[in-house]
Image 1 (spheres, helix red, strand yellow):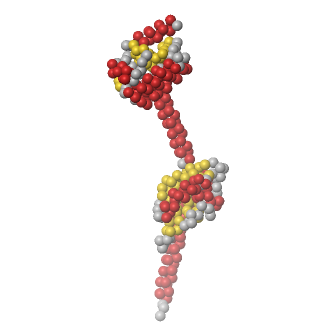
Image 2 (tube, rainbow, N blue to C red):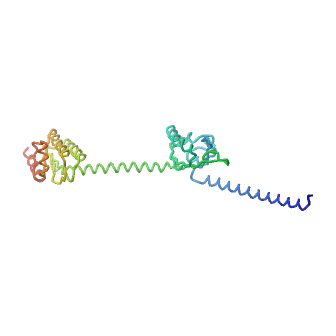
Length: 290
C-alpha cells in the first residue's frame, strides 16, 4: 500500500534527477560553446568527413584559407578543391591510409583558392568510429603553409645562386688567367690537376686566346704537384688548339717527370723555359720584334 511518505520520496527523487539533468545539460551546452569558440579562434581549419570522404563539418577558417563559406564545402570532398594533378597524387597517397583506418599528420597538398591562386595546406587527421566500432570518417585540421613554402622556395633559389657563384669562383681559381701584356697570357697551374680540372683548363685557355687575340700563352707548371698521362694529354690538346688559333704556347717550370711524359706523348715543337720570369721575358721580346 502506497503511503504519503512514499509519494514524497519519489517526488524528491524526481526533482533531484531533474536538477541533475538540467545541470548536465548546462555543462554540455557550455562545453559546446567552448568548443565552438575554440574552433573559431584557432588558426587551423577544423573539419570532419564521413565514411565516403564528404565534408559534414567545416569551420569558418575555410574563408581565410580558400575564400569559401563553410556551407559551400558541406557535401563536397576535399578533392573538389584541388587541381586535377593533385587529386591523382593525393588519392594514391590516401587510399592505403584510409584502408588501414590510420591517422596521418602534416600531409602537404595543393588547393585552389576561390580567386584561382594556389594554396598549400598541411593536413592532419584521425579516424572516427561509432559506439559499435564501425568506421564513420575522419576529423582533422588544415594549416596554411603557403608562405612557408614560398620562403623555402626562395631560400632554395638563393642557395642555388650561391652554389653557382661558388662554382664560378672555383672555376676561376682552378683556371687562373693573367693578361700580363697586350697579346700575352699567363696561366699558372697550382696544386694537383685531375681530368675534370684539366678539361676546364683547356676550355678556359682556348677561350681566352680567342677572345683576347693572344699571340703567346704561357702555362706555368712550377706549382703543379701531380699530373698523370691523361692530364698531360689534355694539356697537349690545349697546346695544339692554341696553335690553330694563332698563338704560341710556352711551358715554364717544367720538371723532369713532366718532361718525360711530354716525350712519351710525342709533344714536339713546344718551347719550354726554366722559369715563369724567363717565359714572360721571351714573350715580351718576341712581341717587340714583330
